[in-house]
Image 1 (cartoon, one colour):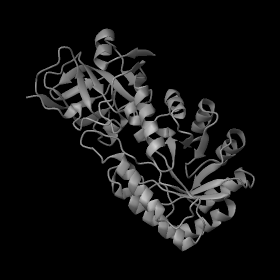
Image 2 (cartoon, helix red, strand yellow; image 1 turned 90 degrees about the horizontal axis):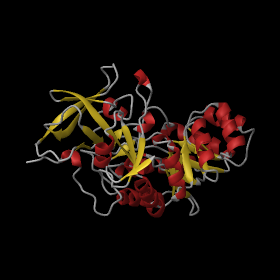
Image 3 (cartoon, one colour; image 1 turned 60 degrees about the vertical axis):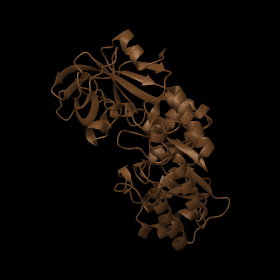
Image 4 (cartoon, one colour; image 1 turned 120 degrees about the vertical axis):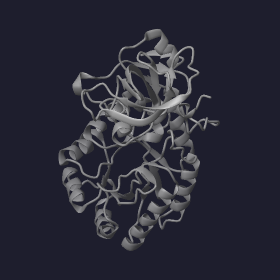
Length: 395
């Protein structure tokens, strides 16, 4: 990897024919230290958001000691990169063989579950181990989040009493976990979820050792400017303090997007313009999965010297594959004179961007370069520009 000081400098010097991933190690370090220093508990990096070995190594070196893994391959990956890390296998439905390998070969002692069937599976796979921390996942609302995660996993509140009592009999340490959905735009998401946790503890009358508020911590995108993360932390801490748990109970969280979004951006080239549509060399089967499938808007900026002085207009993007679904509706605001041959930086792709890439249609990964300027937006800088580059209207 090469180091550059700006995306414009790289595009001008290299004129790349393939998409170029730009990574900012300093942004990931800053995000990790923010959570380590300010979240009132333990922070588990959700590896699924971006399983880059370089990023995992950076986070580990910056104070993240626990990792939320959702597959056996993620367990193996983190164990190889960070051999001293505490691994938590937080997928509620796992293959019995995966549980066994995680426990006996990789030292995993923390597992999540949302059913009695999964509890029985964990007991069998670990041969009745007595050193387990088991986190029972309760289903909570995703109403305050941009992407719902309320349908697939989590025990119904009516099922929690039986499940907590049964798990308490097996677990060395008992936890309750939940997930409010991705990109939670209000701290109230966690406050409301904690009320469900409270009700479950009271009804089951069990001792709870861990409360894991999961992920959902937001990043900043066009049209999605969340409150300061400190407000989320304060609300979670107050709710945790009011729970009927002992003073020794631990508070955990599982940030993925919030730790990785600012880590990388993408430089793409415009191959054709058709009216307000730009055909670019990355798309739905590359790093722009969310832009295509859930209408996510990412910040964009035209990389041209001298800068255009033409007013911005709204564009949509088509990716390079033959699939009509390879379409990102946006709108993405760029100068109205944007044309074939121009380069565009698409920002905030460190989370669920590069991690979603496929090799469909023969379009794969391009080069990766390190660069040292700041992300196009940030929740961690003391004076973050509230208006993203893509929202600036030239007069």
